Length: 462
Image (cartoon, rainbow, N blue to C red; front, side, top):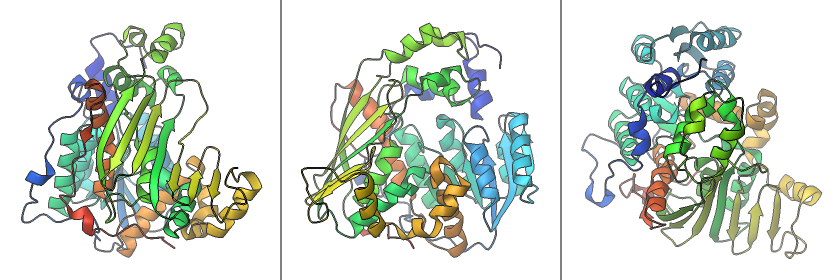
């Protein structure tokens, strides 16, 4: 791609985003919220917490966005039994054609929509998919998910679900009004360790839960140099917004361990602080391979690391961290603590009274594996080897996609409902507001309107 000048921001987002919302969405960190106590669900709308859609023998699938992330989804979905690929949309024709060839290897003949930033809208109306997978820049997720649901499809959206509270409420309202799923595709919930710890928690190994730690620590400064990749459009997000912009990979599993928004407990408040913003500007100044010289001129507002504390309705705490700048090893933390001990990741280790030989030392390596073998999640036992062969972040991507199609075909509730995606994503705008107010505590909206109290916990799926 050619270099951008200072007037080409809108065209740049249109090229990579499909709808090109521009800087307005980046500068509005909270949007319009609703106070759940004052909001009633419309009479014809339905609560989607335990929603089960009618069974689909064949799932007509369409995808919007087949760049670095969406191309992997397309290739994996195409190989799952019961999928009929009907449409592929991407503004870049080369990407769309490459995805068409990939799914064609499995016998699919999807219609391809490309060139125009609104081509995806034509795909929705002409192909009438049952399920639409959305893998586009963050500020396009809400508009695409809402349009997909209004067109009669279930929407499956990459993380985060949306970037403002208003958009999250609009997604929830549309899901309830249309009776269509909208699931944020949090793939980390399908990792081996995350499934294992969920099973251990459900079996009562830790006793009553007290605290969790979740993070996304991933050195990604180099993405500024990768042409039309993720880093090209995310760079503007990092420059304009200051908070935890990418919380769900770490938070999703911990929230499921704690049954948050599922009968037992829910999110209450969050307080957030960011470090100074130094690393990205320094990297941009010394790099000779930037996608655009404009990156050298950006005044980065987002701190290099954000640290937040969530308090739940029951008084439990969760530390959530985010750092995509600092040169350091990858980590999601993935720690859950109860009265009997701790399960932790990165590296995998645990200390549980009555299970490990000495709770003053971590059980790691072979000892950890021996204990893990006793508690392996049934879903991983069934599909773990297949998922590793199919790939996608060690197999978690395939396992997630397989479960989505399996639930739609069997007529089962999804593993993640629309309210969970909204709550996990709400960390973004809430931390922005907290940081802007020097760490002031922010209340989570109750997207369930109180119905979380009657929502079933996620079971241990066999």
